Image (cartoon, rainbow, N blue to C red; front, top):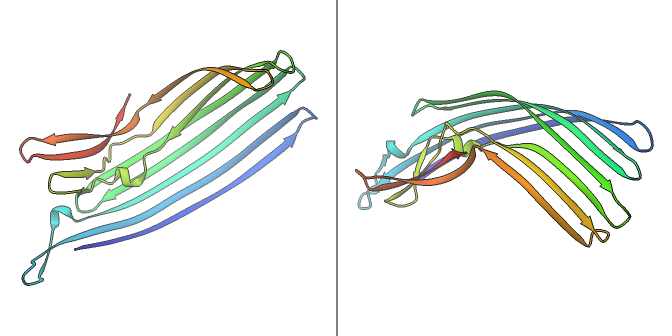
Length: 219
């Protein structure tokens, strides 16, 4: 038998400002706050089939309290002429994460400020041909379920575990391309680098013969 409880509160708010500079140029700026607060617990019981008596399975019982706060601000400038188009921006994000598993006494704390630039330039050779270059840096954060150190069994030999040491994945993505024949054909070359990509891998415990699936960061 399993008794599972979860209380999750999600709050988000943002304020954006747009300023047309002239017919061809525009400036935008804004701030955003998002917060997640979740409390979850899972109690599992071994049940005697003959008597119906329940005993708490302490190895598969746990709780997890998680709080995430993200403060973000951005600015963006865009302008265009008959031949050129330019868009450039910068976003800053301050992230604060606190996670705690009372039964395992495992704590997750993350506190970091990151910058995320983006830029794109396009040149119109003619009405039917143009070339462009784009660059963007972005982030993928691990979910609170991935950070929860709790283990749960898929069957007698396979378990899935959270990893409180997971950190975000940062992505650098650059593109150079061309539109041909008015957009009928597009040719692109790109470079994409994931720093700390999150993947789930299996690890076998040779003493218990149990295979544990756990998410880790890869370069």
